[in-house]
Every structure is written in structure tokens, then in C-alpha cells.
Amino acid sequence: MTELRRCGWCRRALPERSGRGRPRRFCSARCRQWDWVSRQRSRELALSEDELVITRANLDELHDDLYVLACAIEDTEADLESAGPTASAAELRRILEWLLQSARPVHARERWGPEVPPPITS
Image (cartoon, rainbow, N blue to C red; front, side):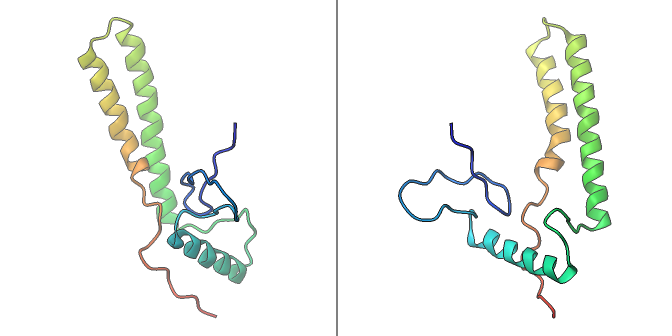
């Protein structure tokens, strides 16, 4: 089995490639550009490959969304256990809807960054 290749920027799965040539690293020119901008900024700030710059507000929002999702998973597990194997389809649907509602903010998080890359200043 071959390992699934992912875009070097957004981590989306890349399509299988047949034929010759270099394997794709990015799913689009936009992702390639964002990767380049990121590498330039990293050099300016003397960041290593393992370091990441994120605003406090974005980090707090992500933590909040993940906390809500973790609580929803716990609630879902408890609801499924209490419902038992004879749970009705309506009850299972209600439980699933609650889990999905809690997961949507994480899923919908903007994965591309701002529309236009900020200018690089020297």
C-alpha cells in the first residue's frame, strides 16, 4: 500500500500521479505561494522548521473549539451508553446531530489564511 501524499501547505490529499516527472508537492499555485511566503517569513524571524507563529486570538479560538468538541465526544459516548443497543433511530440521530454541531467549527476553520498574502518587508 502506498502512503497518501499530502499538499505541503494545506495538507489536502494529492491525486495519484502516473507517468514521469517530479511528484507534486502542492495542490495548487496558491498553496505553493503560501509555502514560499511562509519560508521567507521564517528566515526573517529565524524560526526553525518546527516553530510556528500564530496569534493569541487564533490559538484561543482553536482551544475553545477543541474543548467544545472534546465535551461533545464525552457527551456522545455517555448518551450512546445510556441509550443502549435498543436506541431508536431518532435518538441516534439526535446524538449524532449534537456531535456534528460541535465538530463543525473545527471542520469549518479557515485553512487557507487571508485572501492575499501580506507583503514581505526587508
